[in-house]
Amino acid sequence: MGESVAEATITSWLKEIGDTIEADEAVLEIATDKVDSEVPSEVDGVLVEKLFDVDDVVQVGQTIAVIEIDGDNNGSGETPKAEPAIHETIKEPVAVSEVVKTVTAAQEAAAPVVSSGERFYSPLVKNMAKQEGIDQTELDAIPGTGKDGRVTKNDMVSYIANRGTKAKPVKTEQESSKIVSNSSDVIEKKSEPVPVVANGDDEIIEMTRMGKLIAHHMVESVQTSAHVQSFIEADVTKIWNWRNKVKNEFKQREGENLTFTPIFMEAVAKALRDFPMMNISVQGDSIIKKKHINLGMAAALPDGNLIVPVIKDADQLNLVGMTKKVNDLAGRARENKLKPDDIQGGTYTVTNVGTFGSIMGTPIINQPQVGILALGAIRKVPAVVETAEGDFIGIRYRMFMSHSYDHRVVNGALGGQFVKAVKDYLEAWDPNREI
Image (cartoon, rainbow, N blue to C red):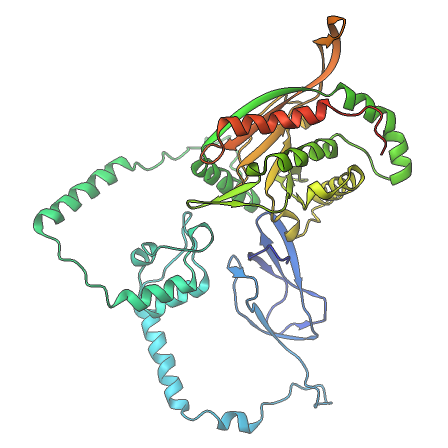
């Protein structure tokens, strides 16, 4: 699914057990973040086992199904039978059955554990919890080292190994009373959200899977980063006139429409090169300085949701290459043809709120990045023009840019200097530039 993709969610099985499958035929559908993809079979055969169910999260590299194929030494087309020698290597089949009974009993004894809105558990973790008799409360208390705090296999192995060796401290009656009192206070403070009551004429619309993912991602970002905004206005009259002059020639020569987006992306990539501490991410108390400048570009999907495909190594592209990449990603986003790797690995994001007429906005940071730039609508306005002969009032094309940044690691000086650098690159545009 791409080298930067770590996991995916199974959304549907297209084949059932016993179905015949041809090579390159789709077996199931998966989703990673906001992109849906089909997983094709690599061989001809019959589906004999599914190892995961719908809505299970699977790590890259895990086996998800078993397909039975014809053996090379069996010309009849029938499935080859296992050689007797294989069965002879099993020394104690009775012992195996006893193990199965023991595991089954342990699973039945433990209450089933489930994922919640705040914490997700993979099937492997759930099975390990059942086998060890770990109930929901105990599992929720295990610290996770995986992505978004998820409990991994190693976390479970480490916890189980130390589970029986840690002596539980004996609490005094006074400490126990204090715990009960504190618990009561917490319960009183945590009030349940008031349910929204729908009237008879109201329409209740279930959120889509992607809508839920976006909502969770946005809330998580606000809770994670200390959002601060800086605003600046840029005069893009030179760019406006230059684009009108060259766009028809560019269309005939390259077969691509020259929009403002690749021009802005080029300026952002240059500014990130000047201020590399904007091209970072935060992991705990550590700052990860990114070697590559991978620009995320917010694009609209047919259903109205937004997705952020990524332009890899954007600072290495000239304006022609940037234009082709922007048009390709935007076009495939509109057609729902983006691949999982197309939306992975972004280090900084640009969103064009001006597309919908907004002159500015306060965008939410796309985690784990530390900054996002919103481009406002380009407006024709009266403005003061400074010349060697004096100041004049003229008609200019101007736009606002809104820079949201993570104040945990980006101070106001850096946040302001970065967006000022973008403005300077735009206003210094060469009206005689050739493309």
